Amino acid sequence: MKGIRFERQLLHKLWDNGFAAIRSPASGVISYPTPDIIAGNGKRFLAIEVKMRKSLPLYLKQQEIKDLVMFSNLFGAEPFIAIKILRSEWKFVKISQLKRTEKGYKVDEDVYNLSLDFEELIGKSIQKKLID
Image 1 (cartoon, rainbow, N blue to C red):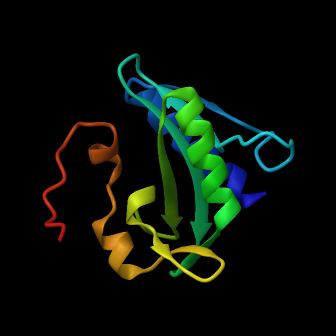
Image 2 (cartoon, rainbow, N blue to C red):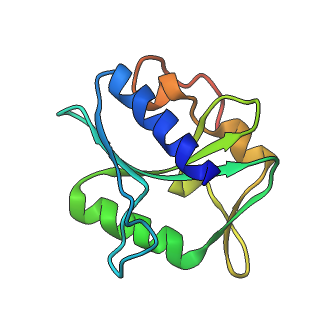
């Protein structure tokens, strides 16, 4: 039940910053790939899978990422993994940043540190980190 609270928190944050956003309560329940949150502002569309953790690493199943990418491609949205670590700000990971594992993907400290913060996600600031 805690995950829903964080999804709603992100939903309100998106609305407060000029994005129309909906939470998909069917995420993980129906047979179609549906992200946790779909948001857009008329210029940019986001498909977001929300994860809440006490600490890293975060492991993701291959099918979960495949479904997010499939939905995003069909919808015309950018796919992101939103990560909320307790007592930390939201971070948003691009699919290309995920590290491959035997069974899927992971977000470790390196990936987390290169991910976007909320302002960067919505285009209010530009990412200043150096990426190899």
